[in-house]
Length: 233
Image (cartoon, rainbow, N blue to C red; front, side, top):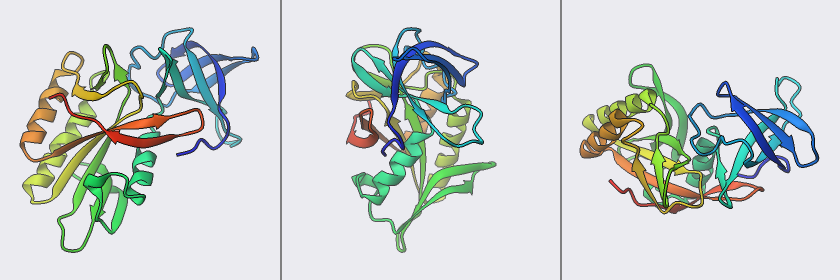
């Protein structure tokens, strides 16, 4: 996934009201950017961190700029939670996720469960349908371990329950965590910040829901799905 235009570098002044970020660009220009991330962004919202923002020429947008990347300890972290679905769509089309190849169609936003829409429904004649939920992961608190979530994630827990129901019905169900960091080599559920989700992920896996974790290659030009990471369960 390439960024549609060159990113501008700046310094984070403040991230506030969840979806706003004040940034001073390297040329001294102050801007308010959209922050497309509803999470806590622990470790990624510290004033003074180098950041990279994109700009849109869409006149209908309230904010022309979008916060895309944060530079932490010399590594880039993708904070835009709208990107993982696009990244996975590109990876599926390129057969870049071996565990999810062999499906003729990849439908998006298909209704299922209790008033929900699954991120992808993979279908192939002669195979059970595969219900695929995508989760963005950008939390690292220590070492090289990626964690999810970075705050209470009740909606994500609901998705796990719905995936369990799909496996009980004889279908295939997968939750795929996209780690938008380049400094992690394993993944775990964050028990301290959301014990209910961590327990729910274990229960879902025991019920037959497959858990996949993939890291990303990240530059200021674009982001792509890279290597599979192990689950430190």
